[in-house]
Structures are given as structure tokens and as C-alpha cells.
Length: 383
Ligand code: FEO
Image 1 (cartoon, helix red, strand yellow):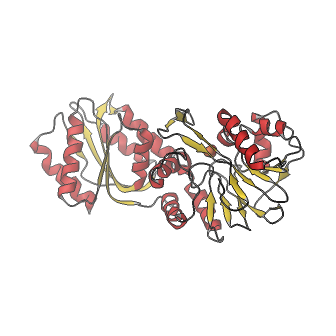
Image 2: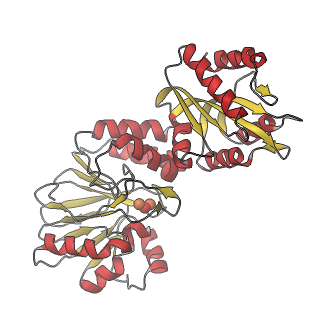
Image 3: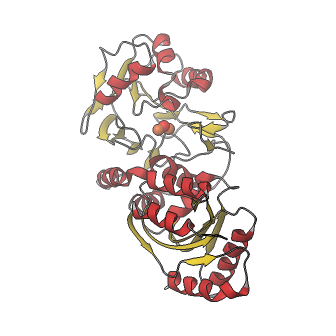
């Protein structure tokens, strides 16, 4: 596949891996993207996960059409992109690695390779290939410390490493936003400040094409994609409405959460997203918690605290630098309700979280007597 006259796609789809990074479900697979720039000097832009190395080498060989590559640019050392590097270097022994100093230190942890000949690049470094010149952009923590991006001045192409990528193989048609958002918040979500820094650098470039390491090559949708990244990395509100995340032991807290949803919709809330965090994809729940500015958490009391699944959810949000939210709390507890207090304590550790009153306490099953309190919470969160 040609991206421009001289830039070719040599990446691969993976439909076999069950969990990306050993934890995220990927029902539509994942793509490990790699590219080839054919010029006086030939540059391979990243490799792929070792599981798909044979397919990658076949794609590379076909694209090279008998020529010998000069450089392999390693933008990011994580094994989903760099674990085929040693095989590649064994196959093309004259190939010169181009990478950051951080990557040069980390690559030997994964590979028995000699990097004494590597070209080390940093912010502003250039690599001339003939007609094409790559200009390097440091992108630390997007999403590992060593990451660099590169911009091809000739074709106005940004090789963006993990940024702007998504779950999903390229042979599956699906919306960019949904799986890009799930990818972003779960993998890069903690590093909003660093993503903002990269977006500022990107704003100075005329970018016609983005070639990420996962997901589709982007062109017409670049303004939308940049806008989404700006909202996500600034922890802004993407969608107006309320997100309800709940756990329920015997179905009573679930009924309260459903009642809350009904009341919010009756009051004109534009959208209510709703997740049973025990049964739905935790990565999707995390994504929704970031997507909305207003969130209601509902959980039973358990062992004098909150049900562990909710505690885990809050811990996971905290790890991703969760912030800037208005949150309502619903607790259930037959003897001594303590879920709200425990949730409040977890939320107090996060930045710019406003807890709205009243906190609704339910004891056991949903009854009409709780309707006033649920209405009051709905009014307060919608205000
Ligand atoms: Fe796709 Fe951070 O590796």
C-alpha cells in the first residue's frame, strides 16, 4: 500500500493476540504499523511485534523490490514495535539504527544487538535520505520515556509513534473515536501534560498525513483527531451528559442506578451512559469516566468499606491521573453504610474533583422513599 509516492505501508494485522499489553481486550485485533521510505537512502520506520515478524519481513521484501535498506528508525522500543529488530538486523547487517539516546539504553535489555554504530537523534535532529528529510520531535511519555516522532518535510507526513493510534486491525472497518479513546485513556491517559506538549509542537507543522504505530493512516480527519487529543489530554469534557458506573451484590444497587438514569433522562439530561463495572470491559468503563464531566458512582458497602470492584475502579482512575470531574455518590448498606465515605476518601486524592450533595444512602432495596433524595442528586449534578 502506498501512502505517498515514496512512503509505503509494511505493517501487519494481529487477530491472534487475546489481550493487548496482557490486559486490554481487542475484539477486532490490533495493527502494528511500520513504513518504508524509498529514496536515495532507504529507511524502515519501525518494526512490528515478533509474533508477526514473518509477515513483516515478507511485506518489507516485497516493498524493497530487491533493494537494500540503509536505516531502521526506532521511534518507540516497546516490544509491540521493536521486538523484530534483532531479526531485521540479522537479515540486513549493514542496516543502521536511528533512535533516541533513551532507546539506545533500553534496546539492549530486550535484544542482544550492537548499537555502537547507531545514529542518536533528539529534538530537532534531521536525517537526510535524498529527497526526503526526517525531522525528529522528542515525545517523552507518549507513551514511554524514550519516544521520538519524526516529520517528513518533503511529504508533510508525521510518524507519530503510539499517538493517534487505536485498537483494531486495519482489515476491520470501525469508527476511529471509540477505539482510539479506549486506547488513549488506558495507555496514554496519565500523561496529559506530555501529550499537550507534543500537540503544541505539532501545531507548528503542516501535517498532511499522520502515520501512527497502530490504527489507520490519517489524512482528512486530522483536524478532528487533533481536537479529540486536545480534549482528552486536557482532561476536558468530550460529551455532555452523565456517566453512571455501578456495582451491585444482589441487584438492589443496580435498581437504584437504573432509577437514577431514568430520573436524569426525565429531567432532560442529554445523554446517560451506564456501566455495570463488574460485567463490562473495565477499559471501556475507564474511558467513559474520562469522556463525561459528570459522573455518578453507586456501590454497596463491603467489609466496612466499598465493594472491592469499585475500589479497584477508583484506584485505576487515580493511576490515570483522573481529574476535573463533578461526582455524585450513591451508597448502599444495610447495617452501617460506609461505601460513600470510602469513595470520598479515594476521590480526595485526585485533582479538582467536586463531590455534589446530597450523597444518597440506600439501605437494602429501592423504595419510593428514596425518590426525593435521588431527584435532589439529579438536580444537583445537572445544575
Ligand atoms: Fe504500541 Fe507503547 O506501544
